[in-house]
Length: 157
Image (tube, rainbow, N blue to C red; front, side, top):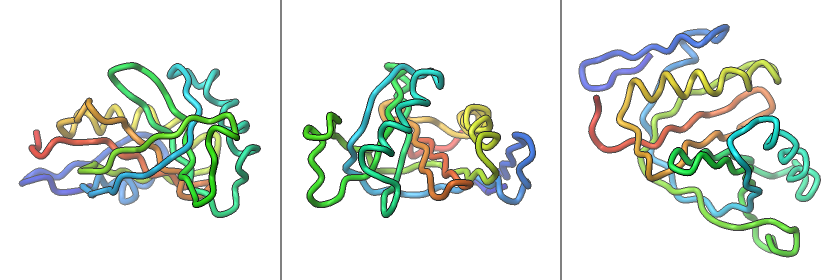
């Protein structure tokens, strides 16, 4: 749970301990990424994760999923490092915008934890003013820990 003004917000999205489901406002910096794009369909973008991981490896990399609500496009992303050449790898390059986000942290074993991403984002949208000009972001902190980041405007509901 978290305080937004005078309100306390608690998410209920399954097996997660409620203490772990607090929504916390955070500020994020812009991140340079390489990515593969697809429709917002796990059957399509699921295999792209394996492809991206095979191209750049897992060690020392930060992975993100980004959903654009206006185009319904999903991007499988990895943060760029010095010396990365997106074009040589057959990838596109771009940025994940910085700014104000509402964060919820999911913990659990894959693939079960992945099934909670959509319902958690839906709960977050109900609790805040989403900024639909920026993508919603999944930051894969660890194999079993994902930060969900909903871009928000400066005002609360």
